[in-house]
Image: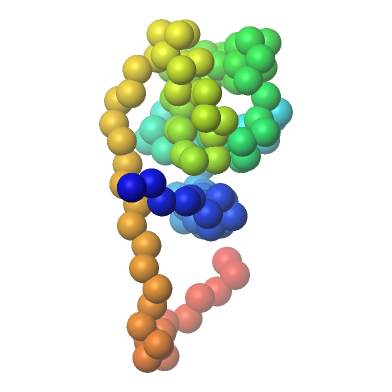
Length: 124
């Protein structure tokens, strides 16, 4: 059984994750988000699709990879449902392999859920 994926929800969760696990530097290029954090973690040092209409031509891919190699880092691609469906095959053909898979589970909050009143979220 195949479930439909809500790409708008995926996009929202990705944006929340980008903010919750920030990189030191972020660049958006050709529909991809490049994240740099001096190699500290794969998530904060990875190439991420912002939508299924990202550019996947050879020149674009080489440019994205070059940004990491210029920092002496191996390019790491995070493929979420936002990535073009063909991207897994494109990367495999370029010699990439899957390192690890992530599983994300979400659920609605119970109607009676309330944030603890002593918790304060400040802009800074």
